[in-house]
Amino acid sequence: MEKAMKKLNRTHMCGHLNQNHVGKKVTIMGWVQRRRDLGGLIFIDLRDREGIVQVVFDAKKCGKYFDDAEKLRNEYVIAIKGDVVERAQETVNTKISTGYIEVVARELDILSTSQTPPFMIEDNTKVSDAVRLKYRYLDLRRPKMQQNLILRHNVCKWIREFLDEKGFLEIETPMLTKSTPEGARDYLVPSRIHPGAFYALPQSPQLFKQLLMLSGYDRYYQIARCFRDEDLRADRQPEFTQIDIEMSFIDVDDIIDLNERMLAKIFKNALDIDIELPLPRMTYKEAMDRYGSDKPDTRFGLELKDVSDIVKNSDFKVFTNAIEKGGSVRAINAKGCGASFSRREIDGLVDYVKDYGAKGLAWIIVEEEGLKSPITKFFNVDCLDALLENLNGEPGDLLLFVADKDEIVFHALGELRLELGRRLGLMNDSQYNLLWVTEFPLFEYSEEEKRYVAKHHPFTSPMEEDIDYLETEPKRVRSKAYDIVLNGIEIGGGSIRIHDSKLQERMFKALGFTEEQAWERFGFLLKAFQYGVPPHGGIAYGLDRLVMLLAGEDSIREVIAFPKVQNASDLMTEAPSPVDQKQLKELHIKLDI
Picture 1 (cartoon, one colour):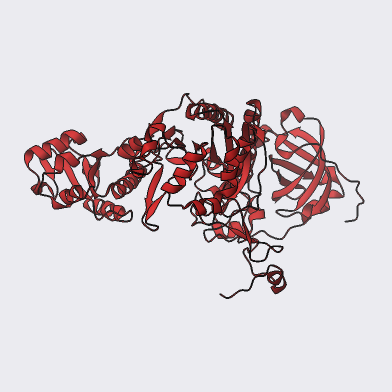
Picture 2 (picture 1 turned 90 degrees about the horizontal axis):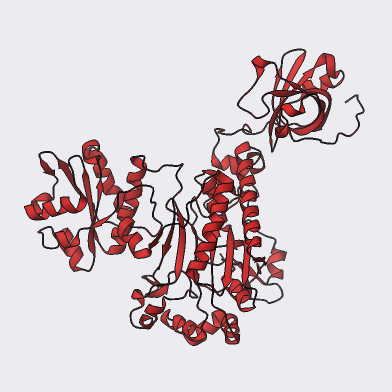
């Protein structure tokens, strides 16, 4: 460049300019979104994180800088000094906030050039996720991605403000800790100083936040990084962020009340939605019975009905055998689908439930003339009449049945209910239904391990009235655990913790741990419990999942700056990757794969 130009200092962000700035001299900086050359006039759309503004280079007004303006291409980084003027009425762009003004350039400094990017830096760009993630630094320039990450920042800010006002302390907990296998697989970190020994990256700060309660800090929170080596999906990542909260001298109602008020603030600030408090609550048993899910989407009906008592004496062996083996027969009335679904679509539903463990799906179409189904011949008139009454069957309806063990029935019909909700357009994206699910089972039986395992974690307190069943009927024991659910997605969960060392020992025993195993895994916690523990409990939210829902996205990758793909690799940095033999030797590791 022939000119020698003094350094330009930015005075305004591009997206902040408006009609109030008309007549002012400004210096703006950013990326060239697009360039239009009309001969003696060159128009540039300049972009920064706050938005886009139009810049005009007039050969008669910017003199020697016009030659540089002719060199500009997409994604060049530039600084411009100029005058804010009103656009002519016929050129106003009402689609952007700066559309009533433009900047007439007086000076230009090309700060950096750019190669042609592999995709256009704009929303709704037609490019695969793999390319987006490989060039994530370019993808993050898109306005939607920047809005998502700004929203994420704001959610964290609002949470900190709210909890600070309520007397909470933000305290960090270790990243390198002890492996306590009980849940997902740990990520392990080898120790150079202690050959053959490993740290684990924390799956959550669970044990440390309980120790902080024992240490008298009373109210703790942390926006914590957590790590789990598990299979990935749209709302799961190997490293994720948790809003972690713990309180002392409280019970379930105290935690729920505080969190409802925090959620109300977040929804008001993020979406200008007033959440009606208190939020509805539903026990785990009711949620499973009505929706086949412990995270029910309550935006629509299609609830499950237990028809076991009605069909238990029928001649249909599929139903009666399931009931005799301790299972159940449950049904959904897909209103109006009997008239609108083809036989091919119904067969497709049969295949759909098989993916969730069901052996099949029985169906009955209710017509004006009577019932249409291959199974009605196995039932007498009274039984069919009772089914219609129980399921509110009317002409045009499609009645769908699954018979099996309760776990399979709930899973299959719960997923079928959601699929029907999607097909029938019953899920209103502008509706936000928040719900507490409470009284989860304390245990669940693991077929793989042939023992009862903790439904949440081994420090969850049982309901007082169920403690006597710990050793004799573990399946009967309910816990003081609670989840907060938004539109069928769990966004947070927690529990009141066990603070009595004797009860904690009984809990470990019920889980099949010997005293030695319990002390080997959790000895530091058990030892601490010998020195006076307050009643305490807490909750943890998946920050990524919460922001995903607030942003209206379908995947948490859209609200994480640098996410992993489904096989837990990073396409941009190409991690994980091999390391030098020297590093392995320092860590006393020898590979034999």
